[in-house]
Image (cartoon, rainbow, N blue to C red):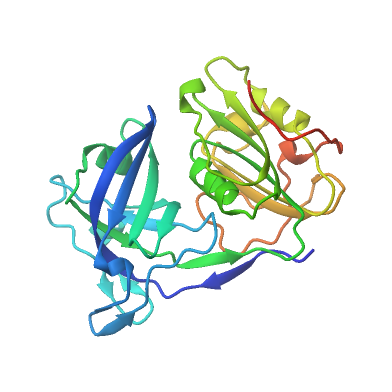
Length: 299
């Protein structure tokens, strides 16, 4: 199977408006944006196309506005790129579009609550009618052909991408997913048609290697697998492994388990890796082939 490919987009800035903001779970806040600039418009003399997001792990930059930064201005639009001022780029944070409805001109973004988070605190305080600046996506990932099933692993920071992937897949697509969240109250109900085996790992009651154990016991299906993982927490590596707490990897493999070893290249960049084609060396993707019926469970 060939690797992922990056499809670039012109980079543009959109001046949008908050339509709604509400809690999905106690620690997950959703902000819904709208505005004419989700469609085509002109900016600084340039014709800008409609907002497009084609893959579940695309990302946009949200410029965090607020009374603490009254002088922050939108970056200047140029021909396919933006001219950023230092104080503006310093207040930009990357987020995955959770849902996008082009017809309704509606863009949904999910924010994990945490103390001291610039964007998370913005999501807590915004109200309908507030202004929002969104740049990107600067491109998308074109998945390789011939994928038979998906293996998705991550914590709550990866959940917008994981949930979107599952919900957008065609009916009956086999998916195995393992998601680590703070507690049972952070589980989300997904609106999907996939053949899904989803395991929730609750960190408040589970042991330090619970996510690793859940991945090892998850069903391994037949055919070509597309495996993807992302986490901001150390829950996605074995205790004592010494890996970075922020990790992201992805791989395509055949019916053999996805494996890695000394000297095998891997993608360990935080946030977005735009064109990685290397196999994953994440230890939780190394396991024996195993099959089990689709289901959902929690640990």
